[in-house]
Length: 320
Image (cartoon, rainbow, N blue to C red; front, side, top):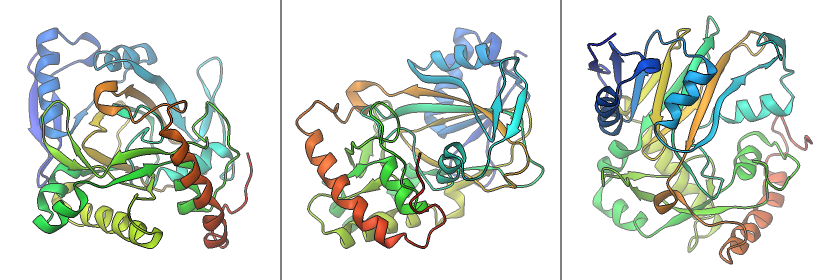
């Protein structure tokens, strides 16, 4: 494949499909064109790639250092021989985390260094459901009225996946140092300026809480309003119906995404590769920074309130 063609997603303000290119044999000139399209459109769909683990990793590394490469994001365990094992119980830690990802989010904002971009490659897709949705937070910010822009410009929120699992599912995982489920909360601005394009976008979703300077209810209401506003306009929301062999790449600095429900008793296998952000633009702080203490305190104060408020939710008080 040599004739690279970029086709914008019809009826949307973002996204494009790229054909006429093989990600496994991408030339430097093709990558430059692809990268420019990535910055312009926010997400890119590559049909019919059928990438191996090594090819997923190699393509991801062209964007920067990886958080992880070709990780199975599936409801099945991958055996040592590469085959897929039994389907996980819906109450397992793996599935509780996966179901949490059905809320709008951007990747790794609950870590010191949030993600630059990520990609998924479809291996096995369910007959119904299991799509991935995206929302353009650049267009969402641009559509805000001037008063709201002025109000949120100086504001920030803490980000924690422990918060979001508790708030969304009533799921309270055991905290583990060094794992995703830890006691840290990282402060990030509500308005982000993209480090490569200079375009402003909203930077808030399910992991966000505890806006300094606002009381708890004001903070929750503002975050909820901003996310709902962002996804309220159909032209800035896209739902991708997966086909086996496809790869999809998106910019975590400018978009939200979420998984859609499906029959969890049926196989769904995607391979995920995530690129770490550049420290100059994506670093909040590390746990040993004095600023981290406040985030830990804010999260520790929030969790008992959520235990009370989420008592009726499905995964309340589950452990491990």
